[in-house]
Length: 206
Image 1: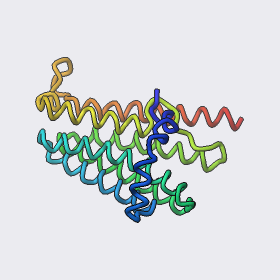
Image 2 (image 1 turned 90 degrees about the horizontal axis):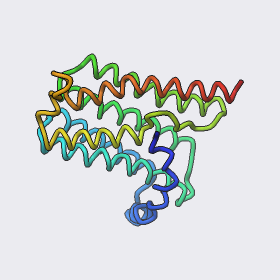
Image 3 (image 1 turned 30 degrees about the vertical axis):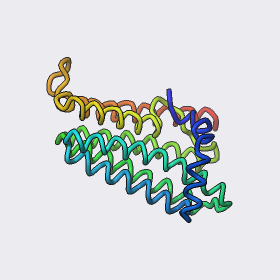
Image 4 (image 1 turned 45 degrees about the vertical axis):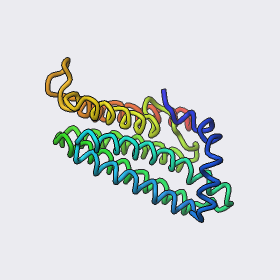
């Protein structure tokens, strides 16, 4: 299960947004930076960890994901696709992931769990780009791709806003709340997804 497989479907709905960005004079790199700014702002909201901040963080996370699609489509529309732009996009995506995860972690003060989540997420993304580097092609597969993670963060942030108590404590697992459970999911499934991607590429190369 991965929403990244739906990228071609989502990209068909980008036309008005790409056109608007083009009319505003935005460059693909500018959109990438704007997307990164949304992620940093979302992370700041998650640090505050109030219901309003969680809602704003959720909206900004979804906006980050959407703009991450727009920048590539805008580059193709303007005919300015480049390796430099791709490098900037991937670098900012990784820093955006860190900003969101650190924000979620700081908001609940579960630093060890946050560290485990960060390593899982970064290894998932690293494996995708490393597979591309060895010539197999960009790999978006596995249990949790970036689109899945952003969607889950957005949903859990809304849950935390509507029911603040659930952000800290879930009835079935004591002092582990919804946000901590999400970080734990990213830690476990992130590493599993990285291994999935590695094994698939290894099989293709063998």
